[in-house]
Image (spheres, rainbow, N blue to C red):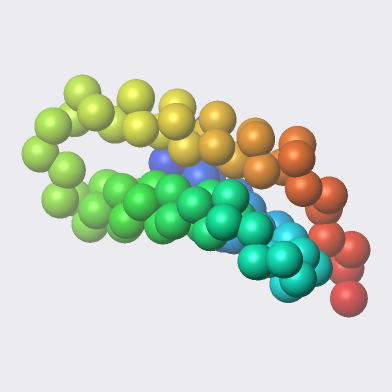
Length: 83
């Protein structure tokens, strides 16, 4: 999976988190932290796409973390049904 493939996957994870936030009326702070972490990863992917990453050694490590994050979200939150 390339870095470009991670962008739509991360977008889908944001939708799952948002759906969980909308469904959980108790304002679960864990969901806020997951969303914040996802924003960090989205910023990294944006910088990568725009060639702003100065340390290419960090790319493999960060993409592995993003994949792990997405796997966690996809495992813990049920997929959204098409509307």
